[in-house]
Amino acid sequence: MNRSAVLKLHFRNEETLRHLEQAAHKLGISTDELAEAAIERELASMGTGLESRLTGILHRLKAHERGPIEQDIADFARGEVEFDDPFQGKRVSTDDPHGIGALFARRLERG
View 1: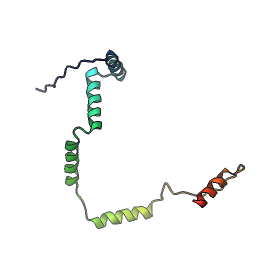
View 2: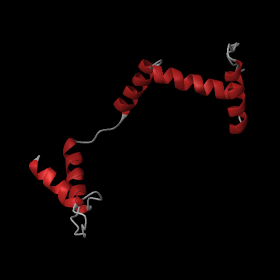
View 3: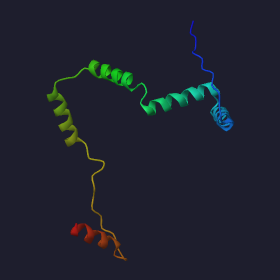
View 4: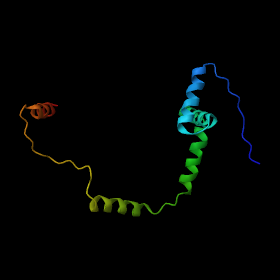
């Protein structure tokens, strides 16, 4: 039998409750689901539970099979040679009737 933990929540600001209800309605979920998700995100941003999340990540990293480093280096080097860099800059010539590009060029040359 799967039982949910219960928290009775009292709102001091009724507008907060109305906003919660409206948002839940727009999302098509219950106010309980939305409140729980919001609380989870807020606690995560505060770092609550960080130790257990990091421990889980550490276990997954330790379980990851590593091959020899030489193979990783060879794969990286091959990728650098076989594939074009999608972010490689290219110089293009354009008209600069107002001299704006030249102003930036002079500023860069002076440092």
